[in-house]
Structure formats: C-alpha cells, structure tokens
Amino acid sequence: MDWEDRLDEWELELELTAQLEGSDWVTLERAAAGTGASRAALRTWYRTGQIPSRLVDGPHGPQRLVPLDLVAARAEASPRLRRNAERRLADQAQLEILAHRVDQLELRLAALEGQRSAGPGEPPGGAS
Image (cartoon, rainbow, N blue to C red):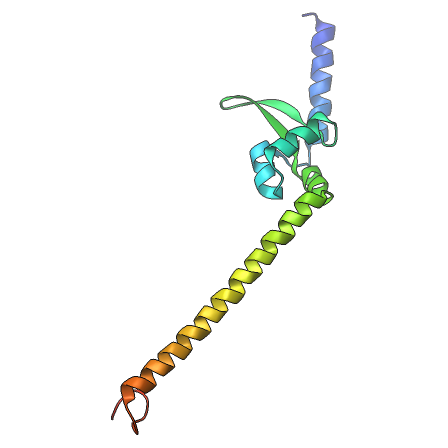
C-alpha cells in the first residue's frame, strides 16, 4: 500500500466520522427493537438503498449498523408497520378495559359475599 492509498483511506474515514457525528448508528437488532421493523425488513431496506448502512468490527466479527433516526422515519412510512403498531395499541387498550372489568367484578363479588355472610337483618361485615 502506498502513501496515496493510505491518505485516501484516511480521508474517507474522516469523512465517515464527520457524517456519523450527531447521528445514532445502531445494530440491526437494536434498530428492530426500537422501531418494530423486523431485521429482514431492515436488510431489504439497506440492500435496496432505502436506508444507509455500514459494516464495522464488532465483538464477534463484522456487524451492520444503520442510523436509527432514518430507520424510524422509514418504519413510520410503512403501512404494514403502522397497522401492526395500531393493532398492538388496540390490543393493549382491550387488555386494560378487561383488567378494569375484572377489578369491578371482584369488588361486586366481595360485596355480595359480605352481604351473604352477614345473614338476614344484619349489616354487611357481621354483627358488632
């Protein structure tokens, strides 16, 4: 390798570092967890040029990084991911409604059991 090649590499590294400043490059796993996009979708997006990516040396060999803000923007534009997020929110809302109904039923059941154990003519909770 001659000096010119090394200088070109160094300039490219400096350029890349400058581009990375202020951006949040993360692994595919972290990007998938943070945006709801699958790793397969992320691979498709960077292979088709919809999002940038780069390979870096990781603890277990090369790993792919993607900018989280661009992945999030791309995920928001995806109708499929939007539907999945809406479905998850709807499921979560239904669970909260059901939990509230169970709480109400438990209160009603406790009140009925209190009335039954008091017997006729006695106040709920037994004789004092």
